[in-house]
Length: 280
Image (tube, rainbow, N blue to C red; front, side, top):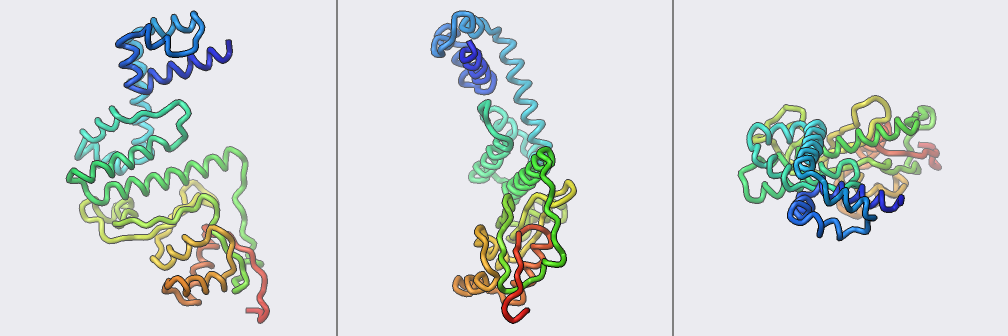
């Protein structure tokens, strides 16, 4: 009985969330219902679903999804609503999510949808990049909320031990993202530039904030981006400096030291300090 009820729930979500399943049910309810392993009572429920109620509920679910998307990605959504509403209408019609789709799945589809439209429509180059940046910020906020609900406290840096040495270990904290944008998406998001005048490439760090509600967002130079992209595993500062030289990354020792210290202070990277042999 329990499995049949679970199956019924899955079937109903398929009908409500997927226009293809709704069309199949509308065309032949008996044949559609027979595809699923349901008891006669649940088969009757599926066969006799009122078409009007199905359409109404499906519209309500889709409207709720689009409202959430507008709140999560207000600039990209707002620009399209004002300038190209047909793109939003098409996305609303074609986007489908399963019942078990994770948080952020609709935003993933939205970013891809915008990028596909950019291939054959006169859209600003900044639009998909701004949408991607908004998606990263949304994900960082979600990670903060999950940590707060689970009672995980943000780490408090130990000021006494947070002293750089070339033997210090550094690593990029979990859920920290370093990203390259073809245009200055950050300035557009901050309304310092426009979608049609978005400027040149930027490199950005996005991470859940150690405290407060606003995620950490830092503009960094390209060498810093290359350094951070190679720090998934803990690495000594001196080994990191050697690696940058081997890979042709133009960053001097003093600049790397300042970068690592600044990123540690912002809690974008983690660190473990031990004084090196000469005490520097």
